Image (cartoon, rainbow, N blue to C red; front, side, top):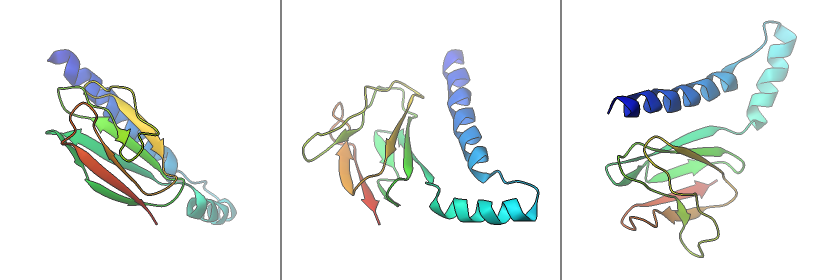
Length: 124
């Protein structure tokens, strides 16, 4: 169990670092104005957690190009698989592993290992 906690902190630290990098700005007013314009077009980062045999949130609204980070917080292996034609899927993810998807279109997905786990991404 000790190794599980260490890995979990590392995954959380990775997500925190990514979030902090997205919020950084320069000290001068001119750079901040440019930074504000960049933030409008910069893709957002969203988190979907796998826990208790469910995806949280089960439905996520995003913009095209946003990054969706899937994190497995269960003690069992999961994956993320596009539901209708199975065009894409993650590899199996053990506890605290992550996988990133770039949102291109609205899609339903599920865990092919545990088909009861389902989720949806809505691109607005």
